[in-house]
Image 1 (cartoon, helix red, strand yellow):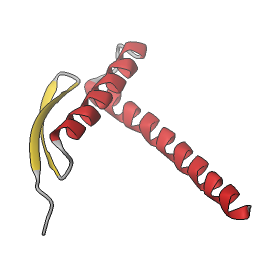
Image 2: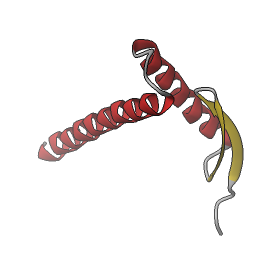
Image 3: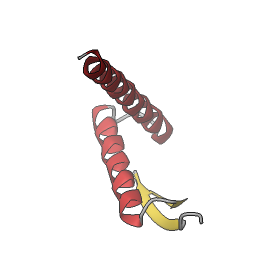
Image 4: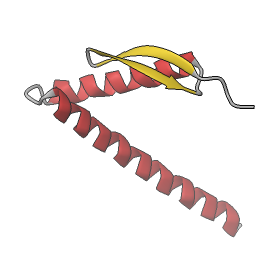
Length: 83
């Protein structure tokens, strides 16, 4: 039996987006709010950037953080396995 799909409209950096997914609506809204916050931080630091450039720079920053966390996680797993 498949998971129930939820549809939520979220606002990110001044634009509304309909989002449909398996996650609970509260989770979708939380993710969107975090992205909105991060984009606004990026725009504050770089006020002359276009919306698209703000989105790309934010995505690059988030991806970099993800890769660092993924690497840290792998190192922790290795440390645990080496014991």
